Each structure stands twice: as structure tokens, then as C-alpha cells.
Image 1 (cartoon, one colour):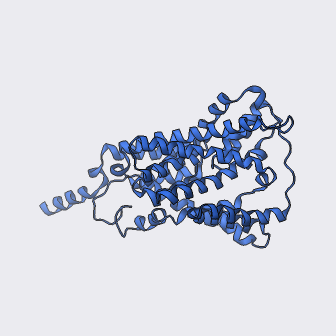
Image 2 (cartoon, rainbow, N blue to C red):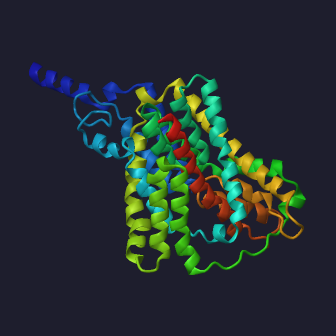
Length: 380
């Protein structure tokens, strides 16, 4: 009988109930909250559901040495997490993004590229603030990239500059991507007048197939020559777009924007979620990173809208830019562009801004990768 009781007691010591702490419960509740808002509010469900469930997985307590934890060398989850730690997954995500992105709006309205560039100021603003708060230059660079609202880029850069902060940076970046409508709308309304919101922009010119094919080739060569360190992201982004626009690689383009990006999104979401183990994630540093990430995102939105207003000072009547598309300068494609469209239609139901907002939006994708390359070049 004693042997049975001892065996039962030993078994109980291995259960999650015996090792549970309040920190684990907090993180599990946060994970469930991510899943809930993703399903009920439809906020980036393809990202928040995997991340949320990954948080639940990663915060089931266990006895060390069982080779099941994401930080235990050789465990299954640790092997899958290598794609995040080594920066393998982000370029594959960018390949899929390129294969599903239409750059026509940017090609037809190249001046809107400047709005996407202006929005990247948020990255460098958060970098300066992070330095002021005591983070190292490398850590500050990894934190600042959150302002680009680009999860894969944030993961890529943090894997190179601050791998020990990757969990907090990745979750922060994806969280703010999901909160694009909540964060950006009040800023857009605060910074614009009713007259500005009613501006109707000219219909973009039609873009030829030849231009669409030339753009990713020329675009990659120019950006890669400027920031060679951003080549893994930029190369895959423009290559994916070439697969889409060439017209002769439809199967490859469909694979890149379909099964491949879906599989990588699942792996990156679940493993990033698992990396938020309570003892590693639930710290004062993580709270600082979330605050700095929000600040970076707000600055990026302000700069995008503000720069559109500045551009209007030099635009003739009839060629004015509706500053509501300035928010789309961040890299959250196409959610930020949809916010421009939705806010614009609140004031004029027949004003369709989506086609125009996509220009700074896709420029933001390129801009965040370039910004990451710049930070990596002098901090890596």
C-alpha cells in the first residue's frame, strides 16, 4: 500500500497542478484573451489564435528535464523555435507577402512612397526612447522596429540584435498589428479636419504588366544596394512579387501565398506564443517593451498622417492627398489601408480611399525592411 501511495504521490509531483503558480495562470488567461478577441472581434485571427494558444501551451508548468519545454535543447518545441531564433521564418513570410501583394497603386502614385517612409520615423523615435530608458543600443533597435507594425521584421531583427527579448518584442508587434483599428482611428481624427477627410483623390492610372514585372527587379536592386543587410527580407519580398506578376509561375506564386505562408504562420505563431513562459516573459522589462512598442506605433501613425498634410502644402488644387491615408504608412497590410477606407467612408460614403491607401501601405512593408537593414548594419 505504501508503495502505491508513494507512486501516486510521485506522479502528482509531475502534474501541472503541483507546479502551477499565479504567473502561469496570468499568462494562460492572457493567451485565452488573445484567442477570444481574435474570434469575437476578428482582430488578426490568423496571428492571434496561434499565438494565444501557444501562450497556453507554453505556460502549462512541468518538471524540468522532461525535454518538452521550448527552452530545453533538443525538445520538439525547441527545434521548431529554431526557425524564430535563427530568423528562418520571417523571410519565408515575406515571400508569401510578396506573392499576394499588388504594387500597382504604388507604381502609379510613386509620391505616396514618401508617406510610407515618413511612418518609419516611429521606429527611430522608439529607438531613442529605449536608449533613454536604459536598454542597450542593440536592444533599443530591436524594440524600435515594433513601430513598423511588421511582426516578421520584428522577429528577424530581434533574432539578430536581442534574442533574449524576442518573445516580448514579437508578442508586442503582433498585438499592435491586431489593434490597428483601435489605435489609429482616434489619432487620424485628432490630426485631420472635416474638410481634409472629404478630399477625393484622382483615380490612379492603369499600370501595365510590363511595369509590374520590372518593379520587383529594379526595386530589389535599388533597396539591396542601399541596405545589403536587409537582403533576406527584401529579396524574398520582391521575389515573391515577381512570381506573382511574371504570369508564368502561377503554381509557385500560389504555393508561396497559400500553403507555405499558412504553414510558416502557424509555426511562428505557436512557437512565439510558447516562448512567453511566465518565468521568462512576465517581467518589468516586458512591460517596458509593450509601452515603448505602443509609443513607436503611435509616432509612426502621427508621422504618416502629418507628412501627408505637409505634402498637401506643395500640391495643386485637384491633386491633394487625403491625409487619412497617412496611417497606412505602417506595414500592417492590408489592415491599415482598410482603416483609411473605413474612416474616410464615415464622412463620405462614396469616397473610396482603399486603392490610394494601399500605396503607402505596401511602401511601409518595404520601408520597415529597409529600416531593419539600417539598424542591423550599425548595431549588428
